[in-house]
Structures are given as C-alpha cells and as structure tokens.
Length: 485
Ligand code: GLU
Image (cartoon, rainbow, N blue to C red; front, top):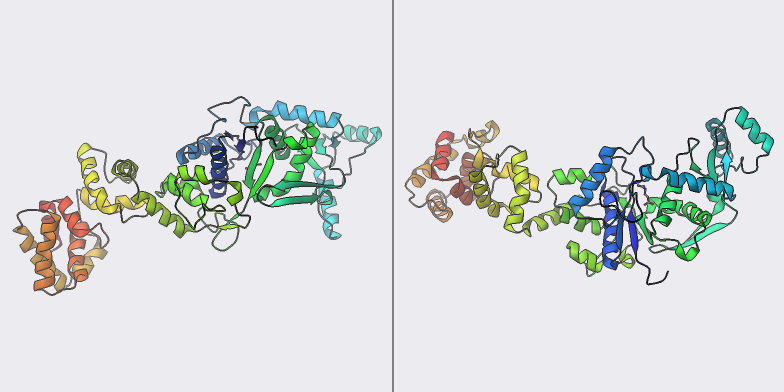
C-alpha cells in the first residue's frame, strides 16, 4: 500500500444487544489506530439482520461510543462522503453487486432447500468429512433450473470458491493461509434478495475505501470469503484492506468471555460507576501494552503509543480486579470539579439528594474525604447517605453491635465530653475522643471509635469518623449518640 494513502479504519458492529467488552475493545483499537495515524475513524452499523438488530440497540451503541469518548469522523449522525453508514439503507448496492457477480460467473443461483442442505450435512457428518456446501447447483442445466422454478423454488445467490487457497498477511498473525477445501461456496444473498454479512461487509469496506480492518479473531476465518468478494468486484490485491485480527478476550476461567463468566455489557459498567477513561485504559491492556510494564494510560497516551506491532496474538484474560484498581486510580486522579460532576447523578439517582444548592455544597465538602477510598462511583451514595437522611436511625443489626455495656459507656462518655467541645472541628473531635476513650478508658481504637461510628453514621463502614462528624455538625452528631443510648 502506498504511504500517501489516507488511513481509514472502521468499527462495524452488528448491535444485536448492548455492546459488550469485546466490541468495545475492538472499537477502542480501531479508534486509537485511526487517531495515531492521523487517519479517519469510520463507524458503520451492520444491521442487515433486521430481526436481531433493533433501533434501540443502535441508539445505545452510538451512546456508548460517545460516552467513552470514541468520536467518529464518519458514520451515523455525522454523515460523511461514503454514506449512508447503516447497511439497512444500502440494500440496493448489495443487490447490484450480487447481480453483477451472477452475470460475471463469480456467483450462481442455488436452489437447494433447507432439507436438502441438511441431508448433505448429515452425510458429511456420517462420513467424517468437513461440513459445507457440496456445490450441487454450480452447473445446473437449463432443464434443471426450469424444473426448480416450476416447483416454485426461489434461489439464493451463492459465491463460487475456486480450487486453491487464499493467503494474506495479517498484521498481527503474519501470513495466514486458507485451503479452499475448507471454504465452501457461500451464500451472498438470501432468496428474498437480502444480503448476508460477507457480501455487505466486503462491498462496504471497498466502497468506503477502508484501508485497515482491525477486528476480533472470531472473524479471521471469514477473511478468505471477503477477499473473494474483492476479487469479484475487480479490486487489485494492493488495494485490499489490510487485516489485523485482535486476540480473543477470555474470562477468568479461560473460556471465551461471555455473560456466563463475567460482566460483559458496557452499560452495566457505566451504571456500576466506572469511568470511561478507566474502561478504555483497562480494555487497551487486553491484547496491547504500552511497554515498560506500564498499566496506566490516558486516552492521549493511547493515541500516541498505539501501534499494531504492540498487539499480541495470544488471548487476553479479563481481570475484574485490575479494572477495579484502575477505576480507583482514575477516580483519585479526578479534579474536585470533575469528581463532583460524576458524583451528583449517582447521589440523585439513589435518592440521597434532590440536587438543592445546600446539598451540593455539603457534597462538595464531603467528597475529598472519600475520594481516596472508593473504587466505583456507586459506592458514593451509601457512604454519604448519613449526611442527608432526615429520619436517621441505626439499623437493627448494627444497633445490636453497640448494645453491650462497654459500648454504652463509650457512647455516654463521648456524649458528655463532646457536649462541652467549643470548636467543632475534626481535630477537636479527635482530641477529645482520644483523650477520653483511648487514654482514660484504655480502649482499643477499633472498639472505641467503632461504637461512635455506628451511632453517628449508622454503619461500621463510613468515611473517616472525625471528618464525618465535623461535616454532620455538632447538633446532629450528639443527637444521634443520644438516640443510640
Ligand atoms: N458486524 C460484524 C460483527 O459485529 C463485524 C464486522 C467486521 O468487523 O468485519 O460481528
């Protein structure tokens, strides 16, 4: 390929559900490669399977890419010179090529019924032969065709795979070769004229002038068929797109990642409080590495450092713990404003605040004391709830933990000493409680402060105790200790 050719990379999902981790890893690499090379990132929706791809899923896919910051240069909503970018709006183009391939002898009409095809497969299975179409309709006589037509059969369009093999250089795997004995003649268009994936994907990659196809390894075996379509279209080999098949993403159990062995929907991560930059950082590491054992990359660094040479061919293992750790790091790296902006929707959705100015002001004060301690944004509402509840009450099971004599003593002493504390600051609160509980009563901090924590926040897990009490205020803190007693 000449070096002056503009790089054009496409992400071409068939949204038959929410985009999942594997799709997004592909989208991220496509995007990063386009940005790294100064090329164009093309987003195409492969929705010819109208039974399974719904408008709702398409809209969700657009939303997910936008949320992740993977803006596209051409595609739905933004348009571009090679549109439309929804395959369902390009059906006449595929029909035209199917007809052209029939006319030029690259393809033929196949009249076999589903039962006949099944019988062929059954015989192949019985004989232990590779499954696939037996080329029955390749050379029908006009009489045979006439007979099928009188029977009312409507043909599919089938591509003829010639003897031989297809060899291409995969940018990640090196030279890959497919013997056509294992690539049977395949269907391009159904008998209602609708195109199949292989026809639509190959035609569009050519017409949209795609130079690089970075996609999942599961599509490796469809490549010789796509190359056959390029040949039928008359594309010169030097103009074929270059292929790079990304390694599988496996679950912890080494099986292919799926709903069964991991959480795969990006929408789920979004709701669970993962930041887009954490998801992108983590997914970037699934099959690629920035080198030097680094694990943290910003989007900008990903663009700078991303090369296909650094993509591995061996499968990547999805590791939820690592994603959590990265998410925690990215949360800690947020500016106070950004952290506030991410937090507010979680707090309102959970019903902890309604969004009043006074509430937001208190959230702003509270966030610094939890920013270091959380790994997902979803942890924020339960942590800050104690500051906002009107009808505060310690839950029964927590209450039972402070019902013993020692806890009562701790609470009584705390109440007495704090009542006379003039300046309600976390340093002041800490000083008073340490002197009374640790020094005078000689209690262990966990025992002493644990009881106060439950009384004041309602839970044994909370932000740092003294800061929490400072934020809650003297009146409410003492009221709650009293109520517990
Ligand atoms: N539409 C295909 C899919 O979602 C991918 C097409 C491609 O990348 O070649 O599986």
